[in-house]
Structures are given as C-alpha cells and as structure tokens.
Length: 346
Ligand SMILES: *Cc1c(COP(=O)(O)O)cnc(C)c1O
Image (cartoon, helix red, strand yellow):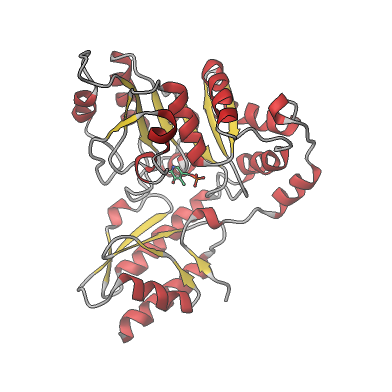
C-alpha cells in the first residue's frame, strides 16, 4: 500500500498530462513578458475569474504579499480575520516588507467575520489611527474547517468596503474547492472583489505557482512589486504549462476530494476516541478532535505514520487531514482501517 498522505493538498504531484505539457511548452523571458505559455495562462486565469488581467507568482504567500502591497501604503491597515493565513502563516510578510498593520476581528468556524465587526474595524479619520486601506477574506478558509464563503457573504463585505472606498482582496488559495462545493463558479464568487489569488500547487496539483487576478492597473502594480520581491521569473512557462492543464482538467475532480473528505470524516466520527464536527465538513479539509485525553496527538501521528497514513496534529487535541488527488477511495479505506484498529486496541 502506498503512503496515504493527508498532510496537505500541497503534496500533490503533477499529472502525466502536466508533465507532457511542461515538455512541450513554448518558452520566452517572462520578465520581458515574452513567455507565450505564461501569457496564455495569465489570459486564461483572467477570463476564468472575469477580471482584466492576471499575474503568476511563485507561491500563495507571494500572491497575498504582492496583493496587499499593491493595495496598501506603508503604515496603513488591512482588516483580516484572526485566523487568516496571511495573518498566521506568511512570516509576517505584510508587516516586514510592506509596513502594513493587520487588524484582526474574529473568524467564526464557517470562515466568516461578523459584518458589524468589519464595519467597526474601519478606522475613522483621526491622526491617532492607522488608515484602513484594505479588507481581506479567505475562501475556502483553511483554519476554519475548509469552509467555503458564499457569494452573498462576500458581496456584503464588498459593500462595506465600497461604503468606505476600500478594496476587497480574497485569498483564494482553495477558491476552486469553494466554488465546486457551492456549485457555482469562481467568476461569480469574485464578481465584486478587487483582487483574488489562487494556488495552482494545492488541490489543482501543479508543481509550483499561484496566480493573482484583478484590474489591469492593479496587476501592473503587482508586477512591479513582484519584481522587487525577487519574484520575476524567466522561462517560467514550464510552470504555466501545468497551470493551463490545471484549469482545464483539475477543477471538476475536486468533487472527488470533497466526497473522500466526507467519507473520511464520517468514518473518523464513528471511531471511539475521535470526533468530527460533521456539519463543518464541506470541502477537502477535515479536522478531527481527540476525545478522552488518554492519548497525545503526536503519539497518534507517529503510530499512523508507521502504518503509512500521514497527517498533522494541530493543537493539543486536534488533527488536520486534507484530501487530495494523490489519495483515492482505497487510501481513505486504508486510513480508516488503521485508525479504527489503533483506537480499538489502545
Ligand atoms: C497554502 C495557503 C497559502 C500560501 O500558499 P503557499 O504557496 O504555501 O505560499 C495562502 N493562503 C491559504 C489560505 C493557504 O491555504
């Protein structure tokens, strides 16, 4: 049995058609904007999201960083949820490189932030305060159970932004998971947002890369910032070639990751000693809680790793598992079998 790797959807490997497209890719110097495959991917991403332009960057972290830096001057403030990836897991880049101050109202389990909290977080014009420059949301929300944000919610946040002349950025590392789960399109979800980033290298299974989409003006600014951060790449069409395949072939299959996540969650919830909040399992991320306090999470992780099932402990009594294109139905069966026998015997 191959390893069942549920640590993240970043562990996904490129498909055969991606590898072939990489071999066949027409290349040029993308800093001169002369890589035809990059230009094709960026045009395609812009169309898919209904935006004027798009820009490939090496990572989701850089996608969010160039976006925040393009929207915000030094000393201004961005409103982000307190569990936002940009706030928690991006090495403080927005503060370190942009001098941008995060304001962090609470994220609920479904990834939303109370609308009045967002309204209240917008700073009045007063010399004591940093000036608010941006609102950020995350869709689907990584730490908040992979929850997808609906268009209705996003539009309400966009309307608050509009009242105050503030743009809205979506960290859409997994926005295709959100769109598939909500049976809508990414274009519809982001109709009223000013910029959106998405990862090619997570569920979509590319080796490297993220893309930012927005207005031509915004993307022009983001391109200059990307260069300044050292993210200008040359014959990067070898990455974009896989990205084009991802947009053509890897979106619909996310449903499979979601049904696998559901089955995994149901199986885990049925195990004595583990519990899952089933109503929160909507995409490809499953958080399981350890009950009873007789086991330590790291013991469970180590024991399961020996049985070929990998996942992370996150917090004192909690695990995260992320289904992905490298894990089939048989992998889910194997994980459930090993977890069941471990908890039955110990
Ligand atoms: C993974 C992730 C990122 C960052 O992507 P990297 O490519 O790992 O830098 C950003 N936002 C969210 C929500 C993510 O899950």
